Length: 277
Image (cartoon, rainbow, N blue to C red):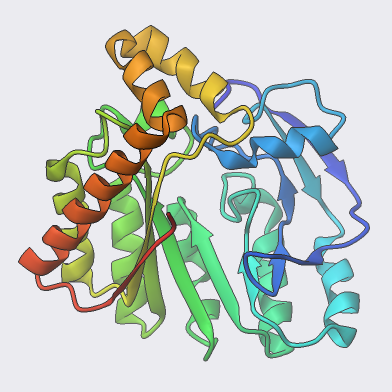
């Protein structure tokens, strides 16, 4: 996360948008303080006047609740994904409360909701979430290594805090899931790391899991290459091969799938596992 975030309050034209991920997506912010080095949402820079790097700015859609109130009255009742190109509970949410206000509106209008975050701040809104009959809360987890995690997810909550969030949500009767990945070759794709994460999620009782590998989306490789070159230069070429060499990529995907399935078998995980590759 940058030491100084360029913050701008804006008025959006639409907040409930059709999507290929879910029926709708809702993003109260453009940009994200978490500054994850592998973030695929960097592509949003193409549609933004910002010159800053991704992770160094946030546009706050201050009219999100009033806009959603109008849109929710007439839009069909499809599932809403919160959020697709930002973290809905990034630190600024504690100041603006836009995600909470929008959740209240979506629940009042009876929308099914899927939330995905890397922030323990979401615990603030568990009182709302437990009211949603068709609401599910998920966290993204990539590594149990708290020396590595701040390098790749500098502004996000520690992995242990995200897992505790799921545990608390489960105790409240909220449907929970986890998004595993993306995993960095040679760093977070190890059998040890994957086994730890699956074991913890089995113990917590996650209803289902998603898993994904690192994808060579626009600007992702340039971001990662800078980090690897500085901290793990021996992994630059092998990571590039996994991203762009067809055979190496397939072998890496097979290894990830095998390690996760073996860990699920070993630790008795009974939920569904969806591989996004």
